[in-house]
Every structure is written in C-alpha cells, then in structure tokens.
Length: 349
Image (cartoon, rainbow, N blue to C red):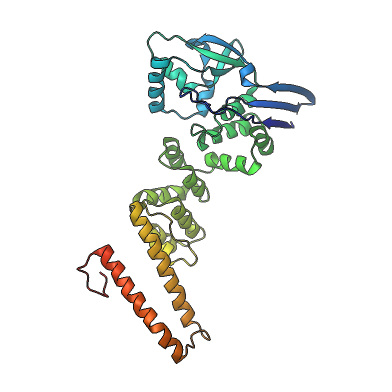
C-alpha cells in the first residue's frame, strides 16, 4: 500500500470558546489523494464547517476513539460548569461508522454534558472519514494545544503503523510530520518499561525525561526513575546520568546511581544543570553565576599548570597582585552577603 497526500492547515481565527477542545484550529483542511491496492480515489478538499450539524442523543455517540486521549477529570468538571452556565457553544465532531457515529473531538464535553441535569443530547458536526484519516483528525483538531500530549500522539502513531499498516513515512505524511517524529513517538510506547509508561500516563514523568529513558534497556529505566524521584533530578541531569550509565561497568553504575550529581561533576565536559529543583528562583540564579565564576578559575588554574604557558615574568606578578587581592576581597564580601557576617573571613564552612 502506498499513500501520498497533502495536508493544508488553514489560517484560523482563535476561538474564545472554553468548551471547544480544538479551539484555535477551527478549520482542518484535507486534500487527499492516495493509492491503495491499485485503486485510486480522489478526495475533495473538506472543511470541518462543511459537515452536517445536528443534535444527537448521548447513546448514539460512540467513544471507541477515546482510548487515544488522556482523561482529565478536573477539566471535565470545569466543562460541566460552563455547560450549565452557557450551554453548548460549539459542536463536537464525529464520523460515521456503520449505523452510528463515533466521536472524534469533544470527549470532555460529552462526559461533562452527562453530569448536567436536563441535557440529553449534543450538537454534533458529522463528517465521513476512513480509519486512518479519523485518527489523524483527532490530532488535527487539537494541534497546538496542551490537550494533544505526546503520549496521545504516540497512541495514534502506533495505531496508524501497527493497526492500519502504514509505513512510518506514510504516517508522517498523513500527520504532517517527519519520519523521525513518528519514530520518536513509537519509541515512547515500545521501548519504555511498564512502570515508566504508567507514570507517563499519570503525568508523573514528563515526555522529555521519557525520551531520555528510551535510551536505556527497559530493565534499567526503573532504577533511573527511582533516582529521579529521590534526587529531584532535572531532565538535563537525567540525560547526563544516562550518558554515564551507557557502557559503564557495575562499580561505575553503582556510583552514578548512588551519587548522580557528584558523578556528573566529576565527568569531564558534562554541562552543569541550568536549574536545581532544590533551590528557589533566586538560589538558582546565584548558584548559576557562582558556578560560572568557579569554572573560570578552574580554567585559569589549568592554564597556569600547563607547561610553556606559566612562565610569568616578575612584572606580570606585580601587576596582577592587586587584582588577585581585590578578587579575594570580593569573594569574601559575597560570602558574607550569602552566609551572614559571622563567618570567619577567608574560611568558608
């Protein structure tokens, strides 16, 4: 099966409708031309606002595609309040499946509407799409919004590739993405351990950390996950820890897992963390600048210890002596401001 298609994402007016899950992406145009089993179909350009809008009772709306969306009880409760106050402000979107309809966009609105007394139906825009295009539409209607999270994207990518038989290139074309994007989404599901997947589903692990964990065998991912929680590691630190673990021996791995920040500090060329979760915003600012100053001094020390570069003249020392004295005094003043005036001058605890 080969598939070639063009996806055009129309410029759209940002919606202020809090009930519209696809707010800001009002128009989703598909210009489809694909070849299957030697038969060619030409699909005309379709806009979601060209679909038929009609009221549909809850029981007629299937939710088979809900498995591609994460539940959000808090958002559903807020949606119920909006429906009670304003009513339904925009139609949900569903596609025809046999004698019924399957919801593509509006799962929160449907769940919320069931909580509202007296509401028995929703306004539904009905469109006709095959399985692959229906799955692509779920992401298209939520593109650019927090609702379309990476795990949801991964579920749909896997369904397109594993269930519908599309190649990674074809899935990328259908979703308007590069093959590498498709490959990364597949890895989120197929290379992560069950424990990491569970935490990702619950939002306890971010996608950036999950992408780093994919680099480790499934059996080692949980050890790093435990370490992340214990030490409150940043995504950058997790990446550095995984770099150290790859190819490390048993003793080295034990040290990295026991003292990750010390291991990162000792590793040559490892970047220091941009943010330490243990510190406040002011503490992080101070730590970052102190680290930068320390790195400059370390480079100076290495330069002075390098043969051929440390041959300072007497005149050189005479000129830089007051600069060094001023630097020492400045360091003590900074230490007093940070640690208090009772520290012993020149001897930090």
